[in-house]
Length: 425
Image (cartoon, rainbow, N blue to C red):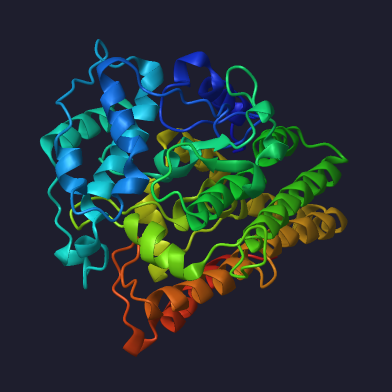
């Protein structure tokens, strides 16, 4: 039975309503999975003390006094009467940044030999309000998510690109135009890498509108439905290729305008993102909305690979419930099943729609698609990172140069891609 032809439309409308604005994540027709504004105003009142500490993070990064300074913050309440709803997302970002900095800052703590050596203690002035803020956002766990670290922590270098309330054009969200609102290290690797996450997912913003229309067309049918379904799928495929082009722009070449030094990247930013054992996995590319949307659209059912299992774990700890619900509805469309059904009833139409569907799979998971480019770029950066001493990943994997484990990661990435490319029709 075809799902309600307007379930996605209603879901997006409810997720875009003012009453849902202060819950975790964002979902709109105009901005896709990205926040509709980039004006997360600084915390005010007593909570401004957290802002002041966060503003000092770049100077504390290599300081032996970082932990003492963070632990010296005042104890602050974060109930609804103490911290208004519109400041909860900002508080989650600030507290998450302070927590990871407490774990990672200082030369003595930067290059621990193994994850189990990272102290998992947090001062109560950080731990307790962080737990409460995460609960207010509707999360089951306490941890730094991609929403906190990137999507709710980005602003434009040129204030003229923003409206008075932080409104912005999604096409302006490029690496060159963006920067962290609260930088941790304030180096170029951080600016490029975090801004790239934003640009990549901004590139797929149109898929929210397109998949809502897809649901209606599939339900209504008609003699020309296959034409519109094909057109919608080709738009989605182009979004995936646009995201791939954005990802390519993260460059290891020092003469590039979007240079991300792999050594600097490994020794600072991506080591910093790894929490100690006992906490949920830190921010990861496997938690990006783009990946989970396309997995749902093409009907990925196999998650047997190591990274497939990891992606399922991240679904529960990194993805906002708002996004998870949307992806579930996209999966229920069963686009692949719809295309296959045409083979018997309308073979000519089937050929057209199957070609468009296969283009989505290729643009997302093919050799020259998003995940194909991702594999090459990630393995190269991981190789350099391992050589210079980064032996932790957000998945708490241990990697050692003697084992050349970045080549093993290439195999894991390929296995995960195989679970998608095998879905072509």
